[in-house]
Image (tube, rainbow over all chains, first blue to last red):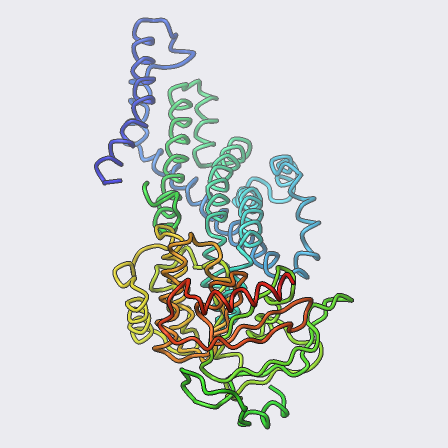
Length: 258
Length: 263
C-alpha cells in the first residue's frame, strides 16, 4: 500500500470522531445539551488553552507520562524476562508458573487499598500498580510466543549448527515477536487504565489528580478535557506500538500490504 | 566420533566404479549392524550399508519402515542404539552432512539470501557468506529473488531455496528426506533435474529417501529397499546419464523394486 493511500485510510479513521465533536458542538449551542452535563467542545478547547498557558496541563501530562513509562519499563522488563525464562526452561516454568497464574487472577486494582497502606500516595504506589498491571500481558504473551515457535524451525537451526545464542536470536525470538507485540499493545492499554485509576484515588499531581481537583471546583470542562487527553494518549501509545510492529514484522504476510 | 571410527576412516571399499565421485574409491559412510530402538519398538535392525563417496543412493520403503530414521541417524539427529555408523572423512563427520527436510523450513523473518546463509553457520559470515549464498542462489535459478521474503515464493521455489541452503556449505553428504514429496508433478520433475545437475557438478554423496520408485531409479546410482527395519533389496542402477524418463531399462528396474515391495 502506498503512503498516500495509508494516509487516506488514517483520515477515514478520524472522520467519525470529528463528526461526533461537530454534532456535540451543535447540540450544545442549540441548548439540547446543558453545559453542566457536558460542556461544548469549544468550552473544552478554551479550558485546554487556559491550562496550556498556565503550564498546568503540560506539567500534569509530563508527570503522568513519566509515571506510565517508568511503571511500564519496570513491569514490562520483568514480564519479558520471566516470559523468556519460562519459555526456554522447563525448570523455571515449573518453579514459577503456578504462582504467577494465581497472582494473575487477582485484579491488580483490588490491591489499591493495600498499596496505599504500604506506600502512601507517593510515586512508588503508582509505579507498583502500573508495573503489576503491565507485567501480566507481557509475561503471558512472551511465554505463549516462545512456546508457539515452530519446533521444525528449531530442529532445522540445530541441524545447521546454530549454537544456543544463534538459535535464540535467529529463530526463537523472531518467531515469538508477533505474540510479544500483541502483549505490548494490551499492556499499553492497561498502563493508562491503571495509572488513571491510581491517580484519581491518590495523587498530588498528574492528569487523574487534575480531573479530581476540577471536580471539587465543578470545572466540568477540565474534567472532560482530561478524559479526551486520555483518549489521545492511549491512541498515541497504540500508534507507536503499531509502527514498531510494522517496522519489525515486515516479513509477516499480515504486514506486507499494510 | 569414536576411536573405532577413526581407524575405519581410510579403509577402501570394493565397489564397482561409480560414474561420479569426488574422492574415487573412498567411503562416504558405513553402517555396521546398526539398529535403532524406541522403547521396545525396533525401528531399524542389523543395517549393513557401505556407501562410497560421490554415490547417489536412494532409500525406498513403505511409510513406517524406518527409512527416515536411517536418514536421521546419518544426519546425527539420532544415535544408533546398536552397531555403528562411521564416516569416511573422520574429522568432519556429521558437521559436513546436510539435511534437506520434507518441508522447506525457511525462516519466514529472514530474506531468501539470509535463509541460504543459515547453511554457512560456523563456516563463513558477513560479505563472504552473502556472496556464496548469492552464487548458489544463481545455480538454483533464484538470484533475482535474493532479497524477497520466503512467504512470496511458490512451493517449488521455497524448496529450491532449501536446496541452496543445504548446498551452500559444500557438504560431503546431502541427506534428503522426501524433499519433493509435496510438490506438484511438473515442479517435481524440474526439481529432480536440478538436483541431478547440481549433484554432478558438486560431486557430493546424496542419500535420497523417497516413496516414489520412479524418482529413485531416475536419479540414483543405487537403490536400497528397506522393509520392516531391514535392507530387503540393494540394487545398482547401471543406466547412463542423462537418463530418459520412462525408458525400458528404468521401467524394468522399477518393476523389480515394486515386486520386492509388494511381492
